[in-house]
Amino acid sequence: MQEQIGQHPLWNVSFLPAPFNTVHSDTIVITWIAMAIVLVVVGLLARTHPVTLLSKRYSLMELIVSGFSSQVESILGKNGVPFVPLIISLFLFIFVLNEIGLFPFVGRSPTADLNTTAALAVLVILLIQVVGIARKGLGYYKHLVIKPLGLGIPMLPIMIIDELARPVTLAMRLFGNIFAGEILLIVVAVVITAHLGLLSTLANAGPIVIYGFNMFVGAIQAVVFTLLTIAYLITPTSDEAH
Image 1 (cartoon, helix red, strand yellow):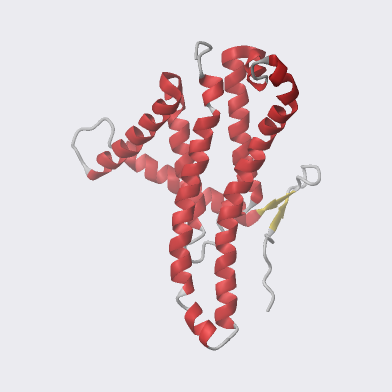
Image 2: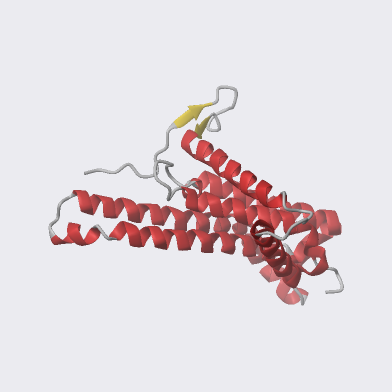
């Protein structure tokens, strides 16, 4: 038995140059579905504000907003307050992208496609550059030269590589964890259908365990991606005095 891993149905976009004229249609459609889910859920929660009657919906919204607000402010201080809506949106979006592939008949999680995680990582890194330059001008990049200069100058190439590697590590970490979970499900399905006696019988319990594990990993990876985004915002939002 052979399994096709990493292949996607394609849409051809004639007005774009190669290699950008082909896109993964399943990833795009499922991403749209995930966006719709997040918008509907957040919209329903937001309808409870301003509060006229204390309800479970309002309590859930208050828990999410206050939790993220306190986390962002504890790391970034008052300069991080404007980024709270972005951080909440990023977490909810990635969480749904990670988990949506576990539902029957949906397909693969969009974050099991490197194109999705790369786009998210590039978005975060571009945001950091824009915020840093907007607040500090080109002087923002002084953080690449550590003090004293006798150490900072030789270390400059390493600091530049570290800066350039951030989107790569962000994208690959999220992609690798979600993709690996889907590979595990394929492996268990192959073992079950191969009729390998006791091994196939024992493997019947595998999908339940792996589904639970993948849900846990999906939630953790959404948290990790969000926390790293907050951490990367420390330098561009910090005051010179600090």
